Length: 318
View (cartoon, rainbow, N blue to C red):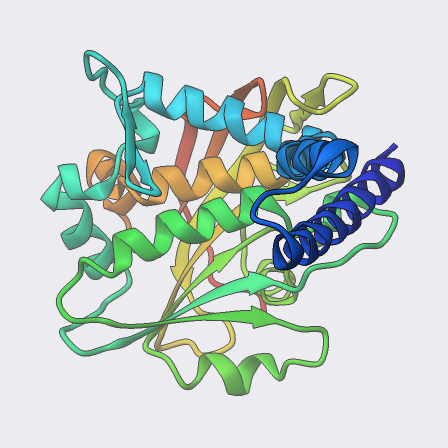
């Protein structure tokens, strides 16, 4: 269907170009187009661009629909969007869900992030995103959820004490230790299947949560927290974790690990991190981990919930 729509779009563009050329040639020989030819040229010129827009909408109706749903949800929650000189906002602003509210609304968040990552003014922070993978394992895909998580983390970090923030893609060939040694701290976005650095940190840190397929397993109570989605993956429940720990690759540095079973869970973990000041229990110990549950409605992450958090008492695995 998309190929057909694109073909129609190309066809309409060709007709439009031809009609414009004919019209120009006709005007060279007469003040106005004459007879049937002139009428046909006017008709084709008038219909060309509406048909072009229609072709693009048909070709990309799926992504456009999801974007409109997302924008509608954000406007309903009080956000304002401006594009091409037109602003859209809710008639009466409603508060955003607690865990997605920008850290700008709570100055304690920036201070908490800076303190938790042991940062000072001018220090450098690496924000590490996994490499996009189009393989068969959908849990390994780096997609919209990871990108939204990246945006939340960058927004929170860039408010902090003149920090030098760098976002980088972790590739399969990346020398991990050499990379993180260049920075005073790192924020890792994505689970072990989607991010090589996340995999290395989880393998070398005594976390009590493990990713097992489409679930997170709690080593303490032996419970399995399963992600559940509708057939189109637009509704359901996902899980994620936050780990605020010493960097096992460079022990005198700090790391924040934000990972979900899917991109939804990763986005939820990043949303909680972006409001770290509202969760003092997460920063009460030197090393902490938390379990996040999130509900997905229409492809939109609702307010994430911190369902468990605990201090890590054991030393990193050597």
